[in-house]
Length: 344
Image (cartoon, rainbow, N blue to C red; front, top):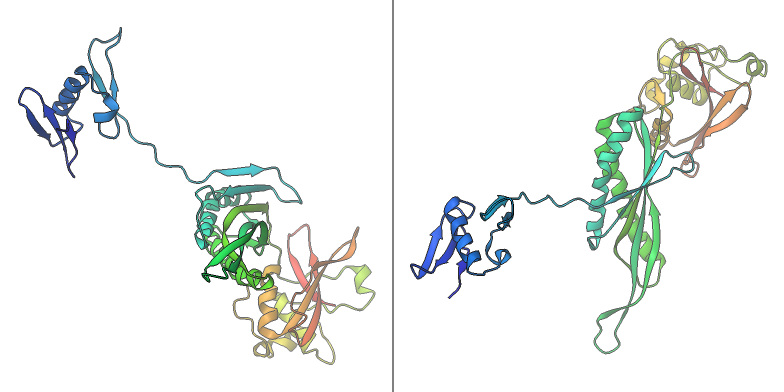
């Protein structure tokens, strides 16, 4: 006969005096503990009879009695995140390994574990940019000649892919940024499989987060063209008083008037010629690709400082699909903190 049994609720313990099983509604209650003590005194090992979370303390020089304490089980920890020193102007890098051996696309769930780290860095810097690296295990399969079953004939554990860089200027953007990054990595998998011969995605091995401080550059109201540039007479600087200099500069480049190009009045009647939906004003550099795609135009943005001269600030990736091209200059006033687009 068993000395102890555990129904769905409570616990049943064999009582030698009564020669039968006695049911105890609360396995952690005083009566149940007395029954455990009797069994332990008879030589039964405590670990064989105690319910989860109850620890036995035998008599000692400080106490002549058996005592029991309730131990709250520790919650399982999430995957270990390893930090590394920064490199290439990035503040920090972090790594999660797929120690739980999550198969197929389940490994991408580990990206959510980086959210607290991203929130922490955003609160510290009030703006961040980040991207993910992912390392996969790929299997090359071949059908068995006799059974037709697919057999793994080769493994590749060094197949890497990188997500797009995401810029965060508001904490509420983090969830969507992680989701979009995950979708980008998943969408790249079929392309990896097609490039190989019989290679199939098996699982995620490692995920890396690279995060850096980010301060969005936004351009708004008018800034006078530096004299050294103005003398070249190669820049159209629209004299707007609002924060929509990107709009007026784009219209000036695509629909130039015959004279007085700097007057904003020329362009107000042309606003419907271009699609500015979803574009912020003042306009950050990160909004320009959206405008390019919607209007089939490519835009290179150049910066300028007296020491460095002019330099490429952002190069367009839409040259293949674009029907027209614009070069813009982004001026910046260190005193006011204002920035302003011009047409080159």
